[in-house]
Image (cartoon, rainbow, N blue to C red):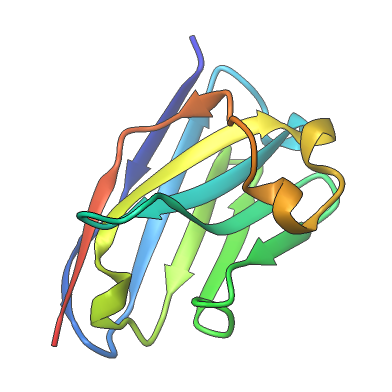
Length: 129
């Protein structure tokens, strides 16, 4: 069975850091794009950061660029999202998702538009001011 297990959320103060993990099972990262999305109460889901580990391509939303870093450890079949300099507006439920990499080759909005085929459960990130 394909599974994505997101973890690492928590409650932190403004300016602190967290690292989210997305552990994949049932498929190998090389064949998929992995994305982190977030959804805050009353807001639409937002694509945060994406990676295709086969070629190292990454994408960051403008709101997190320079603060968040996405990486993958293919040996552990896990994707990480390092979040530094956290702000209250980063508060949301964070979800990881996977989609065949060939469907995300165009870059830009192609990273986050359309349907991702596999989703993990969310992990709550709360940043206090």
